[in-house]
Length: 260
Image (cartoon, rainbow, N blue to C red):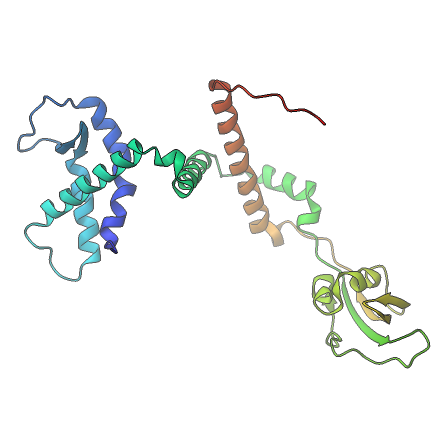
């Protein structure tokens, strides 16, 4: 059965409020008109606010005006969802179902990283840029001629996979030459050549017709990439700190493993 979009949205909006009401509300309190609790399911409150959010989701997903019984339909859906969730906990699905476990773990990772301060200052960004030049350096560019033959003495021919006659980066050259032959080209400069180089059962001659050295990368040119890298590392650091705190609070006993 395919659920409507508004139904799928319920789970994302109910968790926090339910935890709060479960602390503040008791089973023996009546559910009268005007109560902030719409229903109690096996001791677990469903706040009226969640019903209202569900109704808003239904309205966004519908092209027509909602029917009069929409509030009851929304509440019924929340009750069904709560019953299924409680049953999943009874069955210990968060531990026993790999997909459920993975979803929960990924949600916790997102939660830990959401608390990270992802607003770097200028000094942080410039320090990251200067200390990690390999992430931002431009590539040298080459225009090459490539010839190949069955043996060192055989007549040479231009391979069908010859790169186009224009300046290309090493990344581009790998698409045509492969990793090994590209590595042979990279030390060369304009007017230099190498060969015969054996590769793939054939012999190759490579000449650099034109060479352009990569310029020094500028901070402003790469500012967006620097900030993205900084935020990625800040999120990773937040996750590591969160897990470290969980480890400090946990009772963990580990069987010693043999080094053999």
